[in-house]
Amino acid sequence: MWRQTATDEVYRDLNNPSGDSTNIGSTRRQGLDLHLRAQPLLGLDTWATWTKQEAVIVEPNPAAPATRGKDVDHVPRWLASLGADWQARESLRLSAWASGQGDYFLERTNATGRYGGFAVLNLGASWQASEAVQFDVQLKNATDRYREYVWWDGTQTLHSPAEGRALYRPCACGSEAWPRPICRHGAAPGWRCTAGWASYSVRPSCCSA
Image (cartoon, rainbow, N blue to C red; front, side, top):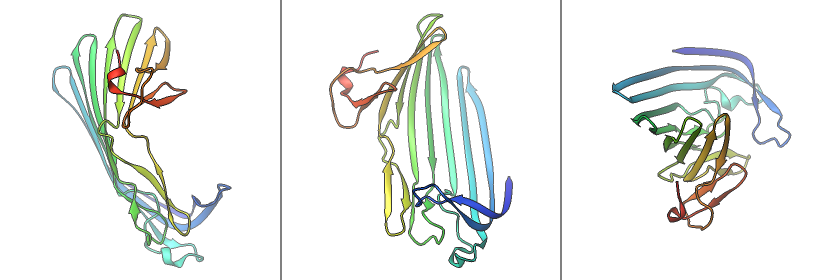
């Protein structure tokens, strides 16, 4: 459990193109963090974290009296993550992990609604081909859930979507590592192949190990 109070807190103004900050007044932040790690079976490691939090404006900047007692913008009330790693065999490790958060207010009067909540599942596999070579495959946002970052520009909500389902294959040889695309060509909605410097849509059928 934690608690933090601040006077004359300076907060970045998301609507200012020059990146200036605003004094939002005195704030109180508090919350509870829980962490759990367990090994229910030999070769299976599991973990989970959960945070409940709040960030409230206790004494506002005199120029913004309507923000008294309101939530600080873009602070979700909860955050969570969990995952599992399974050593299927000596050279093969399978992983699954998920993360999520609740909605947040877009500005400090809390009058424009709440956005930004999400839950995302990721999958991964790691194969030790030899002492010097290791291949990893990761499928981020495996269920292709839509999520976005949202902010308020003073008159309307602005939305920046996060990446959808994406497939990655980094490769490590000795001390060297570099991302490589699993697929070389083709295009189909819902799939992306990323190679560090480039990403593009691909068909699952063109993928190879």
